[in-house]
Image 1 (tube, rainbow, N blue to C red):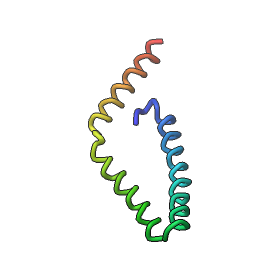
Image 2 (cartoon, rainbow, N blue to C red):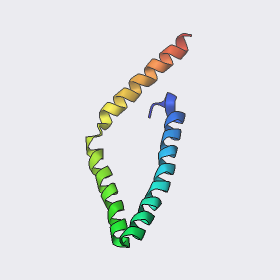
Image 3 (tube, helix red, strand yellow):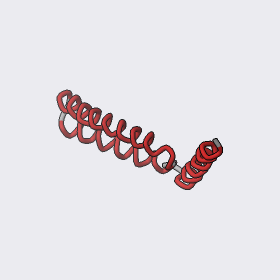
Image 4 (cartoon, rainbow, N blue to C red):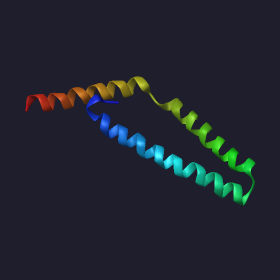
Length: 81
């Protein structure tokens, strides 16, 4: 997370935390009513596994490099003014 944009990322992560807090129980409830609690729990397990698999494509080193460059760019703009 770029230091100069930590508030933006805090809001971003907070928003998705709230969305997950709504979608997870809603998905469980709908599938438990329509089918069975086993199907509902399995659907949540599928979402967790899919998210874990998608994290394999995240390049952490590249993200750190981009965040560092963005910090340097923003600080260069604000310091020169």
